[in-house]
Image 1 (cartoon, rainbow, N blue to C red):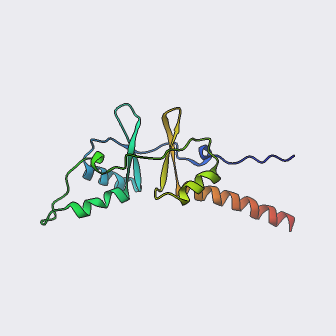
Image 2 (cartoon, helix red, strand yellow; image 1 turned 60 degrees about the vertical axis):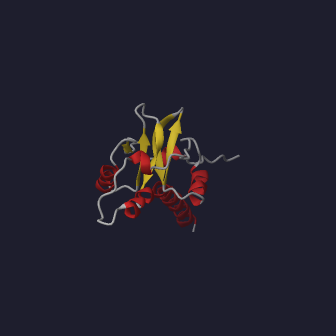
Image 3 (cartoon, rainbow, N blue to C red; image 1 turned 135 degrees about the vertical axis):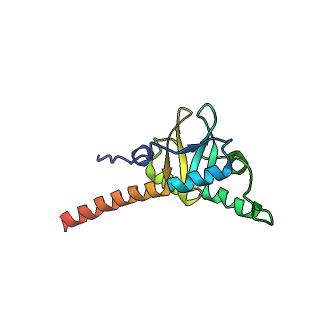
Length: 145
């Protein structure tokens, strides 16, 4: 019997993740996202535990909050972040993770193991898995045909 290894989230996730604190000024957080060229960042509390996620979507709310003189909105990350965040384990197979992305509005999931953030996986990371899989299939077809 040929048992094939299913690739896991751990193999494709980003092990280094940019984080913000809940009390960070929201405009500072927007600048952070822009400077890092990322679409979102995990938000951690003082103990390094996941408190939420701040995404580009969350930050769009800032445009609707400016006053008539277009002054910069005030607030902190905590005021704008999404608090209820679905996490996934690093042992989840990549196919199941891809299915979660298909039904979620988020572009990234925090990867948590034993209550600790160990990384994050994005839609782009899933594309790398797709590319690796397709390259393997194409190589097989080329050598057989």
